[in-house]
Length: 260
Image (cartoon, rainbow, N blue to C red):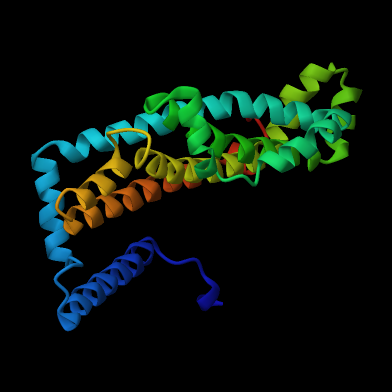
């Protein structure tokens, strides 16, 4: 029974730290043993990251990337949740729209880069448009599935209490579907963070994605390239952790709105 017990708080910190230390050690000694002069060691990457911070380059690029993700993701959320709830609430409408959704959904946002540049030019709006596309479809699909998976007894109970269709959707169905919607939002945010890095490599002249390609092109500073890559991963981990914490909120976890 003890082996099945949930790990202590210190264990949750210790094992990831040990895994990270082993990975850094493997990275360091792989560079030493190979004798490579191209790929940087952890110490060289650390120096490169410190250099970027001192020049205030890294902070500016982080803020630029987060701003684009925030705008694109919020736009996708504001539009995607109502669309998804509507399609889930009206199955007949979903049957009409679903084929178009299934055609557009598998298209990678990266494939939309030429179209985005034609529509918006090379700049901020093109990157935000790509982020919006990357986040929009996962949010819509999560909402549709969330509404479809709400037990029918919830709807019948709401009707028995005299709720109108709008009240039934907002006060019963939406709270019950919220856990699945939150999971969809977390997935969409991860995709948005991936897309912004790719979009910044071709569509804008700032951000972490631009920092990666610019460091590669201007003198092959691979220490700065890897430093930017690590920062992308760390921020992505932080964003995912934030949504995972949101999923543990009791009212969301159990699918109810406001607790009485």
